[in-house]
Length: 332
Length: 204
Image (cartoon, rainbow over the protein chains, first blue to last red):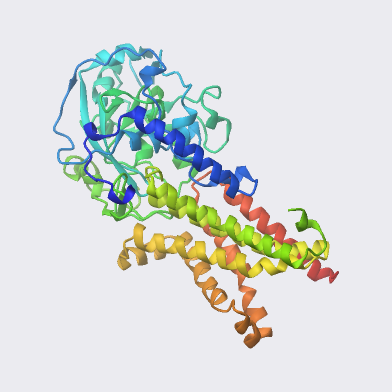
């Protein structure tokens, strides 16, 4: 029962996937039955409600991905309670697979994250491509437990697997002109139903300033909870920048471009008043839609209330100096 | 359902219709309770309940507003007997919606709530919509209708403002995919448009 929900579930205590999937299946059918009845025949309307989340089977079941190499544990996120695997993989913003939170888990089932290549271009010695297999071997994989704060006012704690983006940048050999890095996600209409809707200017583009990109906290994630990234979380490779709002973390990246000028990101184009290039988590800068001074931690149950949002999502000590002297109200 | 289309159904028939609509209106509420008991409200249960109660409040509000256009278009009047029940169900879901926001979402933290209202126009307009429904719910009894007479009619025209505010509240919540709020907005526009058309032409 939700009222009795424990807030400190360790990964070992989580209901085995098969069990909850079974139970969910039954409840979902019951739920949808009621839904259908209550919709007074207009099933489309139901779309407006959050459809029930459906956790995705681990990727290995659908695709043959190489085993992930040895993972080094790190100190990051000590003392944080992990958000459950189920919540991390059933509540996603990944518009390429639909705008509902539970759509990505459902709509990405047939997505093929392997084989995969990432092309490197722009201000680099020479353009090149790197396969996902080579990426896995580029640097030792680390587990990084990071807080993830969404601009919509909710947050999670996720045990990512990845390596510092700085390692990939070193391999890419950018020239002295490279001041920014642009990340371009896959926009494949065949595999990604959301791309057929002109809701965002596809493909999804994100960007970082060079110093942000090489910061040791910035990682390219290839997995979570000790496994490959599930499709709905941005398989096979995504960006994770823990002190910025979640939308900065471009998913399913196919291209990395080094530029001299600040990239125009997708959300900047969609809502220049709402989304800036920096998008640093900042409780002092209000957003026109959502409260930014507090956040709801996912998985803490109905009665846990909100927690205070921290400056730079609690990573101020490590990243604050990069923005010294900048007006963060203007550079939001 | 056939009775719905006949000119004036029998009294017992109307009672049956009322009863079934009453039951239908309770389904979203019962569903939420069942989902809650089974821990099946998803990763963000508060958002789920807020969305669901808001959705059904708006849905029932539009259903309430569709009864007069039916009269204008068909000349039938019996369906107007459903108006009070539907209106009160709208108020019921709106109350749930606002309570969840104040209690579960913001734990009655008045500071944060004040900030939320001031900083976010969608909250302000939503709150205004809810405030305006309170006098309507309070004056829904026969006694109030008899007491207020012409004033009652005037007062209850506030519902149009409530509907417009509620749709705007939904529209401003949605980040980019505005298909659903736009659907509600179009239905509202049609319902109000029919009224305006008939008022202008004084056809009935």
